[in-house]
Image (cartoon, rainbow, N blue to C red; front, top):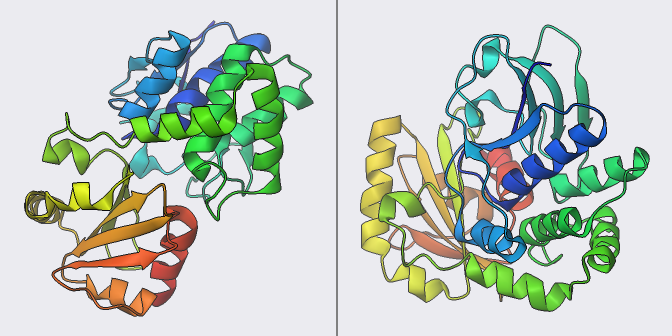
Length: 306
């Protein structure tokens, strides 16, 4: 049987890593014994916390696929965020909660839902296929949903996410509030990362109409801690703008405790942030109160105003 490569997006977050593992397990339960989870980049501190909690190793790094390789995409579908040579691979399935960006010349299994996390969709698939969810798989799913929804406080959170967390917490025997806060705080430790690493931890190229942009988001329990290295961050951002030919780079520094984001915006179209949110950038930065979701509170608003 031909190997099936399963992976999430580049600069992987907890949803991308855990969904790859969970999807690979689902495929094996469905008879695809050569399905294997991979990652397209280094894991972050939050994901490391999850894997350490379970005593699991991170998936193997995948840098490219060969022509004709079978692949399954989770937590993404945009080729720009995916593996090298994806256009020549055979995409079997896509399970995602982002907008559709993929085009193929052949039919395939697609499962897209407007929920807070890919793992919520996978939770449904396990139930639809009547496949038992183990304690380990439940913990992976639960962790990712908590991560993507910031403990169910993000505006991306749906009733489906809440229901999944409730059921998964029972299976995993986890106190969601206690475990989730500890996990989120683990992901805010940036002390061991270089400036370049911080600026690529959760960076996505998201073009707002004709404005070529990258939006990177880092979580913190204290915005001031991150802003203390603002000058170094801006130097790194300007280097990326020059190298990538960007019109805009937005760094969202999201406070997981108070549900706000400090944004640093640089590039010739940084004024788009002012237009979109009715704010004034002072020294390239402004606090966006109540903004925690890149997908729901940044992408549509910035695109509408571009």
